[in-house]
Image 1 (cartoon, rainbow, N blue to C red):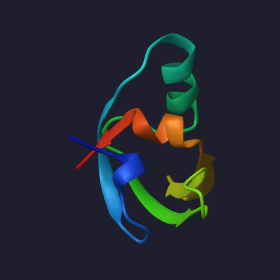
Image 2: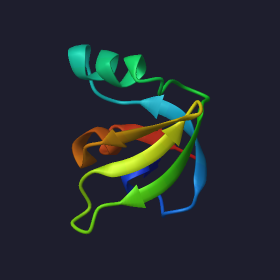
Image 3: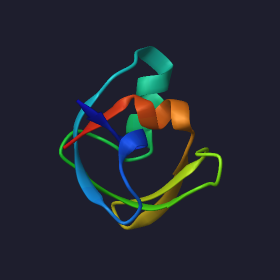
Image 4: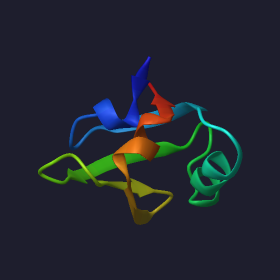
Length: 73
C-alpha cells in the first residue's frame, strides 16, 4: 500500500482508497480528493509538511497526516 505522503515530487497518482473516519474523511472528500481522481504532487515542504498537490485543476496543500490517509497507485 502506497500513500500520498510517500509519493515523489512530479509524480501523478490515482486515488485508490481513503482511510480515516468521520469529519476527517469528509473534509478530504470535500477538497475534491475522491476514489479514482488523479493527483499530481507539485511540492513538498523541506520538513515534509505540508504537501502541495494539484487535484481537479486546482492547487491544494495537505498536512502530512492527511496525506497518509490517502492510498494511491
